[in-house]
Every structure is written in C-alpha cells, then in structure tokens.
Length: 344
Image 1 (cartoon, rainbow, N blue to C red):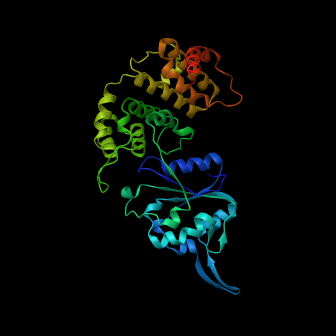
Image 2: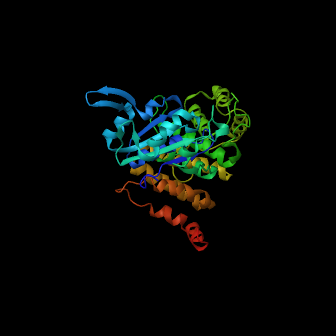
Image 3: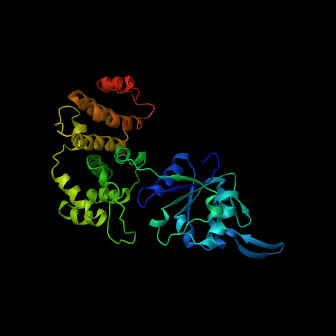
C-alpha cells in the first residue's frame, strides 16, 4: 500500500517481527522510516503546538514531521497504535488520512503505516475509535514457521552489524536456531494466555536473542541465558542441540564435497543454512560458488528436497558478475523437474 498511499495497519501478536518488517521494507525501498509511538505522545504532537507569529498563530509540527517534509518521501510508522488513548487518537485523524501534522502538509511521497498487537494483548490497550479505524486498511500478520526458518539464517537478506558479535559465528548460530524451529515449529511462537505475564516466552524476537547468545556466550553459560530468553522452550532446544553432531559449515565450505551428511533432514537443513549464511557474510564469488558445491553435493547424496529451498536463498545473494553454478543446477534438476510437473 506504499505506492497507493493507502494507510495500512498490521495486526499480530507481540514479538513476531512487525516493526522489524516495516524497517526492512523502508530499507528495501530506500525510504526513511520515522517511528512514532503515539501512546507516549500528546495530542499537540499531531495537531501541532500553537506558536504566536507576526502573521497569526501557527500550529507548529514536531521535529519528526519536519524531517519527513524535508526528506520529501518516507514512511511514517505509528507503532503500538492500540495503546493510544482516545484524545491522541482524535489528533491522529488528519495525520493518517490527509498526512497533515499541525499546519504542515507532508509531501505526497510520504506513506503512513501502523502496527499493533491485538487489543487483548496490548499493554494498556485501547480499541481504535471508529473514525480512526476507518482510515486504515487492516491487515493480519501471518507467521509461517517454514518461511521463517528459511529466511532467518540470512536475516531476510540484511543482517545488521552488531559490535562484539562475529558475523560468521552469528550466521552459524542463526542457522542452528532455524534448524530447531524446522524440527519443532510449535516452539516458534507461544503467546502466554495471561497477557500480564512477566516471564520469558518464545517468539521470533526472543529466538533472535538466542542466536546472539549462542554466538557470544561460552557453552557452559548458554542454557541459563536461553532460559531467560525463551522460557521453558529452552529445555527442548537444549536437548535437541545436545543430540546434534553437525559438521561445521565453515569446514564444509573449505571442503565442499565429502563432508558427512547428517542423517535427519532438520540437521542437514541447519548445516546448509549455515553455509548459505556464511556465504552472505563473506560476499565473495569464491565462497558463493563453494556454497553451491555444498548444495550440489547434498543433492547428489539424495537430499535435493532439503537443498532446493535453500538454493533459492543462495541464488538471491548472487552479484551480476558472478558465474552461474552449472554443476549444482544439474544436481538439483531432477527435483526442479518434478516440481514443474506437479505445477509447483
């Protein structure tokens, strides 16, 4: 709805990545994103603060609105909008539909997006007033564990640089978490029935915490920290992790053929995802080609069904000057042929 300039609100449980998705969207479209949490604002932050000037009273807009106007385009992101009290909701009416803040009309290139938890899961939640609700296109956030597992190791194509976390090690940790969620998708999101709970519980946000813990904490200190991130789901993850005897993705890249293929699909998935994540971090044609060799080797060993969806992620990393991995495509061709016959 960015190009159509229809205000849209995205509903979904806490911790599923709504805010991160909006930020990623802005980065992909090369648009600045200005996040405003309306519940901690006053009505004057949207209707304008009256300032006396020589030519009369001017309803002065806040700095974020002026910055959007100066940029000429961008996304105004109203996060946690269902925590906004009625008086502030009333002040948002012109902002959302007309894109007017105080006496400042935002440029046509500015889009308005919002995100919210369901009212029953929002801290101090309020139903949107009928006039404000009617100004939005209402969309439900859907969370697919298989899609999340496929995208998380490469961090949706754009992992941030985090001081103190080695990129290669974090990439391998993300792949390990993704392998567990592929094995046990029921643990990806378990929203507590008691919305006032103050204990840890698993969500995409807290599994991302787990990946960082795995990347930096000594093994002997990891379990208590993981418990602090995902609660009781940590025990299932820790038991699964203890049963893994996986080849190091970095070693697989060094020797793309001949490495031991894990016996289970979720184990092989974690290894191959780790290989692709490292290829993304290193951003070199040589590593990219070696990653394809690894996928081709897995396919040749009878695991093309596991390698194929990961190949799609790897293909997206290609730079224009990098050659096509012809041999790996030959190895995956039988699966591609079958999928084509059944119309997938």
